[in-house]
Length: 399
Ligand code: ADP
Ligand code: MG
Image (tube, rainbow, N blue to C red; front, side, top):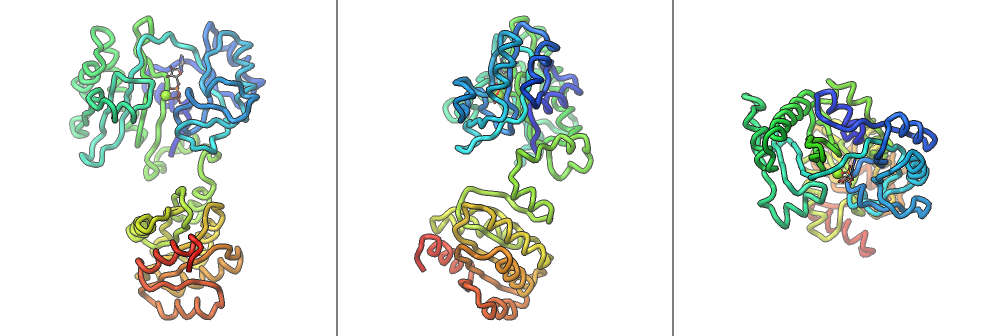
């Protein structure tokens, strides 16, 4: 689960991490009062969306002005003006895709005098099963580009959770960033506090870009992006309350109501599969035959007819879907249940696109008979390979 920058900063602040004072606002009328309360002389008005690259982003509407999604303001009036320009407008950044994201919240914070910008992130490294730190002197910019062009400028190390965070780790960060004296001490404290926050809140990823040194020699977090492990959310009601569902894919929210493992993707072939492994294989084989899947969907082992119907509705609600592939290997899941669910769903939502169904396993004959006798225009397939080729050719207009 992701949260907004201002929320991430509030969480980090609880752990003694240095962030700027700021106020989140939802209405442009609140901007000037918030700016006055904070005090000047410099403010930054920051779009709050679940995507990075806001500073270099562009708004779609010309009323939003020429500047990006993060703006430096030199007066209370200017803060108000930016708020009126930005709120409700659509910001496009390298991370939002062309559609962009509507800005419904702004964060107004103290402007900092920046001497240097660094990069610091933490994540769970699956290869070592440890929390990894990634630091670089090349902050404030696209870290993927740095990794590509000059990988030697990125320093990473992992922390053994048995011994926990130690002064050594702080020194590694200070060394990588070329910090000495008091700044090195600040780095040690920061690293320890960030690690404590990361573990205490079951974070999955934390990114501070930029981490800055101010003109008065303080280490300070100017941006914060945090995501949490969904499987641990049950023990963090405070974090769950920060959820902003307007930032999430509607289809994914709907799927979570039915306990369906659904992930929206960019392609054109909707997939309904049981079992995560088979679902992944289905996505791979669609790509192998030259098309792109519209989603990952694992309906699970014991899906009911109702669940299958819900899944089908979610798939067809995606306007990009030009064909649907149902691929079921009935083990615990029974083919006749899937068949009935598919038929029921098609009857309620209609079928505007080709549908290929591949059934195998428990009650397969019964399942096939149900589909055959439904009179619906379903293309049957014998195995995964056959199914993938049939749906790819169907969305390309062939048969
Ligand atoms: P994004 O990564 O989405 O572009 P950031 O929060 O990193 O958003 O802001 C972009 C840039 O704006 C930063 O790299 C920094 O140079 C500047 N900036 C952000 N917040 C402040 C602030 N409080 N004071 C001064 N400059 C800021
Ligand atoms: Mg940033």
